[in-house]
Length: 286
Image (cartoon, rainbow, N blue to C red; front, side, top):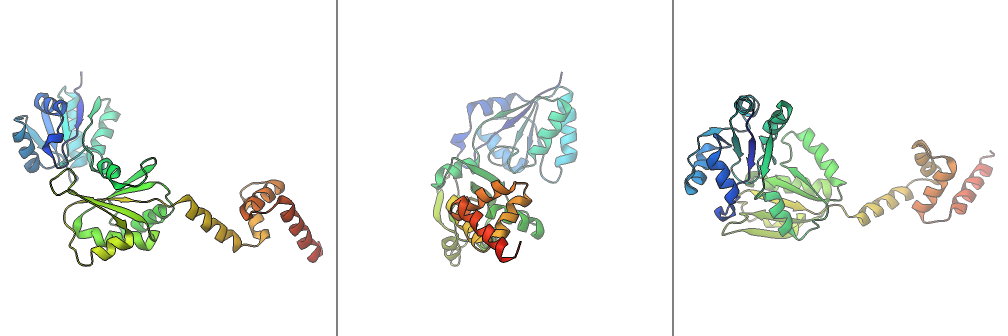
């Protein structure tokens, strides 16, 4: 019988957020797989946990995951922890989880702190619909594609960023998305927790003179439906009625349905569109 992989959330700053269930699990498993054993030993010492550790991180995630799955299949129970927060969120733990599922190894998650959710609840922005983007890609082409997608995203967007890349990322967001409200969170749950509610332009202005410090969670306002609507109206106004009709007919609508949709887009009656098209036909001698 195989062992179980336990995904154990650890504090993102305040040790008081460690749950008794996580402490108990870390004490009883056979091995703890940690992102950085040098950081994690401090946490384990604080809670008097003496379970053996092994390193599992971005640079050994595939090879080491195979090894850990082998140990699990051999009956060992293993706990996975990251430096802070919930494993497998913007973290190599997702590779291990996938391999476990493919091998039939049971996986369970012990809930606890997550920087993305903590920041979202503090942001003052909409929490009803949101998406998590993690770190923007380093590759310029891939980053441009992601930014293009985010420019049309109506949900609240959560991103992570390191201090030395913060200003560059804010610039990229401002150029691709235009002005948006944003909340920048750092030192979450710690003594000097900072929640900075501003706009992209305001943030860029602020960091002209202030040096970014600490890891950041950026919570960004999504594109409003009203903005989308205004952009659609602007694009329709730049089209002729014929082009507008061709757009919908090209999507598979029949002629009557296309007229109905064009009329709705333009805020006029269907008869107005019909009359315009008939007059255009007469002018062209059709």
